[in-house]
Amino acid sequence: MLAEEKEKTRELRLKGMGYKGIAALLGLSRDSVRGFCKRNGLDGDSCVVALNVEEKVKQNLLCVCCEKPIKQKGQGRTRKFCSEECRRQWWKNNQDKRNKKETATYKYTCPYCGQDFSIYGNKKRKYCSHNCYIRDRFWREEDGIQETANRFTNTC
Image 1 (tube, rainbow, N blue to C red):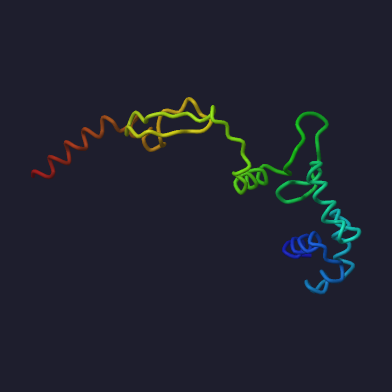
Image 2 (tube, rainbow, N blue to C red):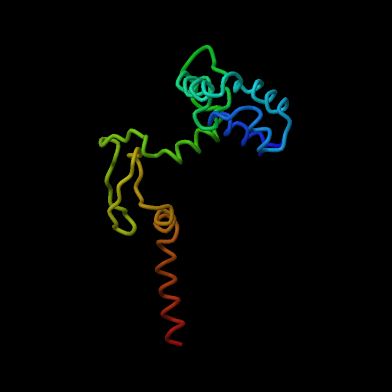
């Protein structure tokens, strides 16, 4: 079974479709679909499968992002994601679920360009961008030299 077929099988099974229907739709045998579903915890009554998956996600047995099984460690915080990539992808797609506190937003003025900016969660930041930092740190003296050189070439 190809990766695309596995993903499509998982999707259709979670929507409540039976083994025969999935097999007919994807052009596979019913037994290969059933075997895949059994190996991945999608077996049983098709209507109950979707409810079971939701419950497993709530109990942190399946990844919130890709719904793959998660091995929990004995100690520490319970895992919600199977990998770092899944965690980053899920937070990128669900930024509205972040609990941003007002006290963690800091307002500053950039020492290079003078622009006001606000930053979340970093109270040590000084510059509005990396570009301003580089220019202030390394190009300040060169800017004066460059301006003088430009004036000299314009007059000649």
